Image 1: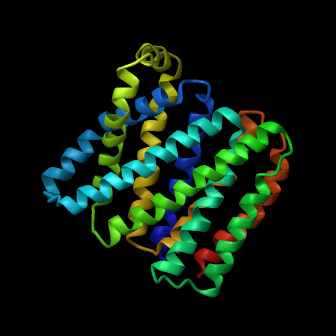
Image 2 (image 1 turned 45 degrees about the vertical axis):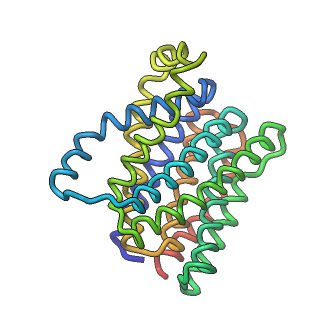
Image 3 (image 1 turned 30 degrees about the vertical axis):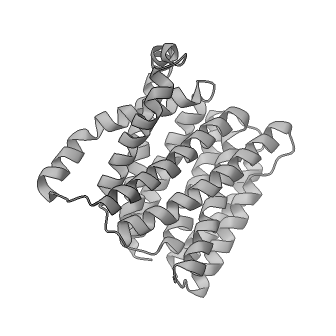
Length: 286
């Protein structure tokens, strides 16, 4: 893997685990309201950067570009909704590893089988190690663990979907990563607006903002930043390598869940992280 892509992916992993911690802390808030607030705030915060991009690059959007961006928006919306619901049912150190583990394994499988990508033997070994390590981390026997596991698996399907879709968007369709990311935030905010502002949830918006304002702003910044870095990495390396390498974030998330949220069993899951680290090293050397 290109060393520049690996650096981008590792920085993105830290940012990604951090915003998931913030989302978990807001798990008891209405999930649609929280997701809408994060998307809306993100659209506002990053608007100067997007405006500057439009002035400098002067991109032209075709109907096919808009269709690709719309598909990405739909996949990400389902992902965020399932993830936030999952955090209301299970631990960060269960939902996050399972979701992140299912996603890259399926994305890599699709990339190899249908997109013609051919990772080296070390790359294949790394993919396998990352997947095994992530699922070892998700161990647990409580009812909450089983619910978290189910939501994690469902979320992982959409992670695989948007990973492959977005890699093609910035690769084959040459949609600028910044445009895909920003318009995705705007799209989620617009799609959710009727449900949030037109019904009973409207009264929850101000209360949710007051209680979780710092988390909303933090998630708005880190969500956008983490995925922008990954999209840029997609232009430097194949999806079958980028997708698994970013899963170093599960190690960070398990530590955050154990140390900051006092989740049980995190030390056992931390031991399993050594398997993931081995996978990341293998991928980086492939």
